[in-house]
Length: 117
Length: 112
Image 1 (cartoon, rainbow over the protein chains, first blue to last red):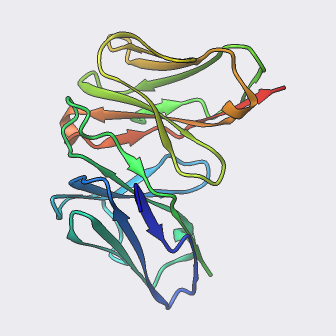
Image 2: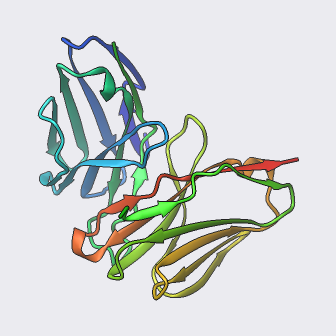
Image 3: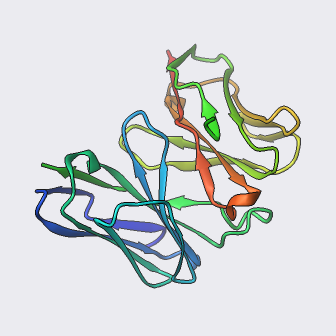
Protein backbone atom coordinates (compact mmCIF):
# COMPACT_ATOMS: atom_id res chain seq x y z
CA UNK A 1 0.00 0.00 0.00
CA UNK A 2 1.08 3.55 -0.65
CA UNK A 3 0.15 6.96 0.72
CA UNK A 4 -2.00 7.49 3.78
CA UNK A 5 -4.59 4.85 4.62
CA UNK A 6 -7.47 5.39 7.02
CA UNK A 7 -9.85 2.82 8.48
CA UNK A 8 -12.73 2.53 8.83
CA UNK A 9 -14.02 4.76 6.04
CA UNK A 10 -17.44 5.00 7.66
CA UNK A 11 -18.39 4.61 11.31
CA UNK A 12 -21.74 4.93 13.07
CA UNK A 13 -21.68 4.86 16.83
CA UNK A 14 -23.89 5.59 19.79
CA UNK A 15 -22.92 8.12 22.41
CA UNK A 16 -21.94 5.42 24.88
CA UNK A 17 -19.77 3.41 22.48
CA UNK A 18 -16.00 3.25 22.34
CA UNK A 19 -14.37 3.04 18.93
CA UNK A 20 -11.07 3.87 17.31
CA UNK A 21 -9.96 5.37 14.02
CA UNK A 22 -6.73 4.13 12.49
CA UNK A 23 -4.28 5.85 10.18
CA UNK A 24 -1.18 4.40 8.55
CA UNK A 25 1.29 6.14 6.26
CA UNK A 26 3.77 4.51 3.91
CA UNK A 27 5.58 7.68 2.86
CA UNK A 28 8.45 7.66 5.35
CA UNK A 29 7.08 10.83 6.94
CA UNK A 30 7.83 11.83 10.50
CA UNK A 31 4.82 14.00 11.37
CA UNK A 32 1.19 12.91 11.54
CA UNK A 33 -1.97 14.90 12.12
CA UNK A 34 -5.65 14.57 12.89
CA UNK A 35 -8.01 17.13 11.34
CA UNK A 36 -11.78 17.44 11.75
CA UNK A 37 -13.86 18.61 8.80
CA UNK A 38 -17.44 19.71 9.42
CA UNK A 39 -19.80 21.07 6.78
CA UNK A 40 -19.15 24.69 5.81
CA UNK A 41 -16.33 25.06 8.35
CA UNK A 42 -12.56 25.20 7.87
CA UNK A 43 -10.49 22.15 8.53
CA UNK A 44 -9.81 22.10 12.27
CA UNK A 45 -6.44 20.85 13.42
CA UNK A 46 -6.85 18.51 16.39
CA UNK A 47 -3.51 16.86 17.12
CA UNK A 48 0.03 16.85 15.77
CA UNK A 49 2.70 14.23 16.37
CA UNK A 50 6.31 14.61 15.30
CA UNK A 51 8.59 11.58 15.64
CA UNK A 52 5.71 10.00 17.64
CA UNK A 53 5.75 12.79 20.24
CA UNK A 54 2.66 14.96 20.57
CA UNK A 55 3.47 18.57 19.71
CA UNK A 56 -0.02 19.98 19.44
CA UNK A 57 -3.34 19.48 21.19
CA UNK A 58 -5.66 22.14 19.87
CA UNK A 59 -7.96 22.28 22.91
CA UNK A 60 -9.64 19.04 21.90
CA UNK A 61 -12.16 17.54 24.38
CA UNK A 62 -10.86 14.56 26.31
CA UNK A 63 -13.45 12.27 24.70
CA UNK A 64 -10.97 12.23 21.79
CA UNK A 65 -7.76 10.44 22.74
CA UNK A 66 -4.90 10.16 20.24
CA UNK A 67 -2.20 7.52 20.21
CA UNK A 68 0.95 7.42 18.09
CA UNK A 69 2.94 4.21 18.71
CA UNK A 70 5.43 5.00 15.93
CA UNK A 71 5.92 7.46 13.07
CA UNK A 72 3.84 5.36 10.69
CA UNK A 73 0.72 4.79 12.76
CA UNK A 74 -1.77 7.12 14.38
CA UNK A 75 -4.97 6.30 16.20
CA UNK A 76 -7.88 8.36 17.45
CA UNK A 77 -9.76 6.69 20.29
CA UNK A 78 -13.36 7.82 20.68
CA UNK A 79 -15.59 7.49 23.73
CA UNK A 80 -18.83 9.08 24.93
CA UNK A 81 -19.05 11.26 21.85
CA UNK A 82 -21.78 13.79 21.16
CA UNK A 83 -23.89 14.16 18.01
CA UNK A 84 -22.01 17.38 17.19
CA UNK A 85 -18.85 15.30 16.85
CA UNK A 86 -20.26 13.83 13.65
CA UNK A 87 -17.83 14.89 10.91
CA UNK A 88 -15.16 13.72 8.50
CA UNK A 89 -11.94 12.96 10.36
CA UNK A 90 -8.89 13.33 8.18
CA UNK A 91 -5.47 11.98 8.93
CA UNK A 92 -2.47 13.58 7.26
CA UNK A 93 1.27 13.20 7.29
CA UNK A 94 4.25 15.34 6.34
CA UNK A 95 7.98 14.88 6.16
CA UNK A 96 8.38 17.24 9.11
CA UNK A 97 7.19 20.50 10.61
CA UNK A 98 9.63 22.97 9.06
CA UNK A 99 7.75 25.47 6.96
CA UNK A 100 10.64 27.03 5.05
CA UNK A 101 11.73 23.90 3.24
CA UNK A 102 8.42 22.40 2.22
CA UNK A 103 8.73 19.65 4.82
CA UNK A 104 5.30 20.55 6.18
CA UNK A 105 3.41 19.78 2.96
CA UNK A 106 0.50 17.57 3.95
CA UNK A 107 -0.65 14.35 2.33
CA UNK A 108 -4.15 13.42 3.41
CA UNK A 109 -5.84 10.10 3.84
CA UNK A 110 -9.30 9.47 2.43
CA UNK A 111 -10.94 10.23 5.76
CA UNK A 112 -13.23 8.46 8.20
CA UNK A 113 -16.84 9.63 8.08
CA UNK A 114 -18.17 9.48 11.65
CA UNK A 115 -21.83 9.64 12.59
CA UNK A 116 -22.77 9.82 16.27
CA UNK A 117 -26.37 8.92 17.04
CA UNK B 1 -10.18 38.06 13.05
CA UNK B 2 -10.01 34.77 11.20
CA UNK B 3 -6.49 33.73 10.35
CA UNK B 4 -7.18 32.55 6.80
CA UNK B 5 -10.20 33.82 4.91
CA UNK B 6 -11.76 32.76 1.65
CA UNK B 7 -15.06 33.54 -0.01
CA UNK B 8 -17.13 30.38 0.33
CA UNK B 9 -18.75 30.86 -3.08
CA UNK B 10 -20.03 29.17 -5.01
CA UNK B 11 -17.99 30.70 -7.80
CA UNK B 12 -19.44 29.83 -11.16
CA UNK B 13 -17.48 30.24 -14.40
CA UNK B 14 -18.13 29.01 -17.95
CA UNK B 15 -15.93 26.34 -19.46
CA UNK B 16 -12.79 27.81 -20.97
CA UNK B 17 -12.81 30.92 -18.77
CA UNK B 18 -10.29 31.91 -16.11
CA UNK B 19 -11.32 31.13 -12.55
CA UNK B 20 -9.81 33.39 -9.90
CA UNK B 21 -9.76 32.24 -6.29
CA UNK B 22 -8.60 34.54 -3.52
CA UNK B 23 -7.35 34.09 0.02
CA UNK B 24 -6.29 36.59 2.67
CA UNK B 25 -4.44 35.88 5.88
CA UNK B 26 -3.96 37.72 9.12
CA UNK B 27 -0.27 37.53 9.94
CA UNK B 28 2.54 39.19 8.03
CA UNK B 29 5.00 36.64 9.38
CA UNK B 30 3.90 33.71 7.28
CA UNK B 31 6.26 31.41 5.50
CA UNK B 32 4.49 29.03 3.18
CA UNK B 33 1.22 28.97 1.30
CA UNK B 34 -0.70 26.14 -0.25
CA UNK B 35 -3.70 25.48 -2.44
CA UNK B 36 -5.52 22.19 -2.04
CA UNK B 37 -8.38 20.87 -4.17
CA UNK B 38 -11.12 18.78 -2.61
CA UNK B 39 -13.70 16.98 -4.70
CA UNK B 40 -17.02 16.23 -3.06
CA UNK B 41 -16.66 13.21 -0.79
CA UNK B 42 -12.89 13.06 -1.24
CA UNK B 43 -9.89 14.23 0.74
CA UNK B 44 -7.87 17.37 -0.08
CA UNK B 45 -5.03 17.04 -2.56
CA UNK B 46 -2.20 19.50 -3.04
CA UNK B 47 -2.26 21.60 -6.21
CA UNK B 48 0.33 24.28 -5.59
CA UNK B 49 2.72 25.57 -2.96
CA UNK B 50 4.31 28.99 -3.03
CA UNK B 51 6.91 30.48 -0.73
CA UNK B 52 8.00 33.83 -2.19
CA UNK B 53 6.30 36.88 -3.64
CA UNK B 54 5.26 36.76 -7.25
CA UNK B 55 3.74 34.19 -9.56
CA UNK B 56 4.28 30.47 -9.79
CA UNK B 57 2.88 28.59 -12.75
CA UNK B 58 2.16 24.89 -13.14
CA UNK B 59 0.22 23.96 -16.24
CA UNK B 60 -3.16 25.68 -16.18
CA UNK B 61 -2.66 26.79 -12.57
CA UNK B 62 -0.94 29.98 -11.40
CA UNK B 63 -0.47 30.89 -7.76
CA UNK B 64 0.15 34.53 -6.93
CA UNK B 65 1.55 35.69 -3.59
CA UNK B 66 1.69 39.24 -2.26
CA UNK B 67 3.02 39.22 1.29
CA UNK B 68 2.78 42.99 1.73
CA UNK B 69 -0.96 42.87 1.03
CA UNK B 70 -1.34 39.50 2.76
CA UNK B 71 -3.10 37.68 0.00
CA UNK B 72 -2.55 34.64 -2.12
CA UNK B 73 -4.59 33.74 -5.16
CA UNK B 74 -5.03 30.84 -7.54
CA UNK B 75 -5.84 31.32 -11.21
CA UNK B 76 -7.14 28.43 -13.27
CA UNK B 77 -6.89 29.04 -17.00
CA UNK B 78 -9.09 27.27 -19.56
CA UNK B 79 -11.36 26.02 -16.77
CA UNK B 80 -12.84 22.57 -17.28
CA UNK B 81 -15.91 20.95 -15.70
CA UNK B 82 -13.47 18.56 -14.01
CA UNK B 83 -12.07 21.56 -12.10
CA UNK B 84 -15.38 21.84 -10.21
CA UNK B 85 -14.41 21.29 -6.59
CA UNK B 86 -13.76 23.14 -3.35
CA UNK B 87 -10.40 24.89 -3.24
CA UNK B 88 -8.74 25.22 0.14
CA UNK B 89 -6.14 27.84 0.95
CA UNK B 90 -3.67 26.97 3.71
CA UNK B 91 -1.01 29.08 5.37
CA UNK B 92 1.85 28.07 7.64
CA UNK B 93 2.44 30.80 10.18
CA UNK B 94 5.96 31.35 11.43
CA UNK B 95 4.87 31.62 15.06
CA UNK B 96 2.78 28.45 14.99
CA UNK B 97 5.45 25.87 14.40
CA UNK B 98 4.84 25.38 10.71
CA UNK B 99 1.43 23.78 11.02
CA UNK B 100 -1.07 24.58 8.28
CA UNK B 101 -4.10 26.73 9.01
CA UNK B 102 -6.89 26.33 6.46
CA UNK B 103 -9.51 28.69 5.14
CA UNK B 104 -13.08 27.46 4.80
CA UNK B 105 -12.67 26.83 1.08
CA UNK B 106 -14.20 28.26 -2.09
CA UNK B 107 -16.57 26.10 -4.06
CA UNK B 108 -15.92 26.37 -7.79
CA UNK B 109 -18.42 25.30 -10.41
CA UNK B 110 -17.37 25.22 -14.07
CA UNK B 111 -20.38 25.10 -16.38
CA UNK B 112 -20.09 23.35 -19.77
